[in-house]
Amino acid sequence: MCEIRSGITPDLSADYDMIRRRLFARFGAPWIMLAVLLMPVMLMWQGAWAMLPFLLTTLLLMVYYYDPDRELPSHPLGIMSPVDGTIIRMDFFHDPFLHRAARRIRIRSGLIRVYHGRSPTEGKLMEYWPQADRENRQYAERTIRAAWWIQTDEQDDVTMIVLGKLAWVRPQCHIRPGERIGQGARCGQFPAGSEIDILIDEKSYLNVQQGQTVKAGVDTLASFNHDNIEAT
Image 1 (cartoon, one colour):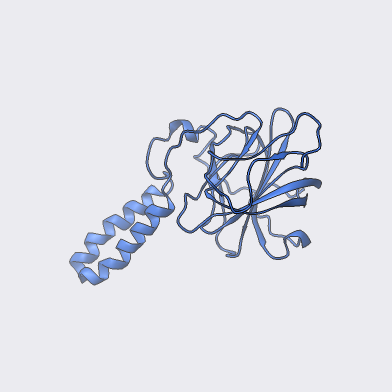
Image 2 (tube, one colour):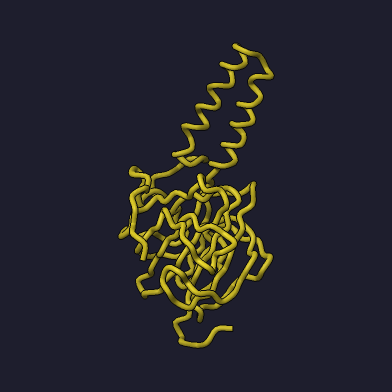
């Protein structure tokens, strides 16, 4: 397996969901405030036309860092959507990180979406690969930007892989390997327009269809199969 590397935001922990009560993500709030403060400065210094780029920047930052609280359903065996988006692929796949046969559910996040990722299941973050770029024939058409491995108390494994084309834009992880996280809890931030692969046991039951729109932490993608029955 890949080596775990430092790169996780130090002041954000597994208690992130418990202490946050705001409309925008706290790590994005300073950028929004800076853009807002620069607008009147540019207005007085250069006029209205010079202020417009900062107004546009402020609006884009507000969209990007918008992070509303949600009523999260309880689904003990459920694998929840980690991001707002659309299901674009469902197939059987080889997990390149855990080296197992798996089901793959790929979600494409839109440009106007909530980009803050949520954990698909309750469990422990076993490993996080923030620099996951590597040659992989299964991902020849995409570049792996980061990957999470979360394991439940029942030893069910979920691999979450973020794909993207911009080498300088990378996801962020808000928890450390070894920490626990709740189902649907905020776990990181995904770049705009990312595609996210959820890899689960090949016997899991699917709860969604290709083309379906899903919301992070709210919609159930699949369910773990504890009955040892072959899923279809």
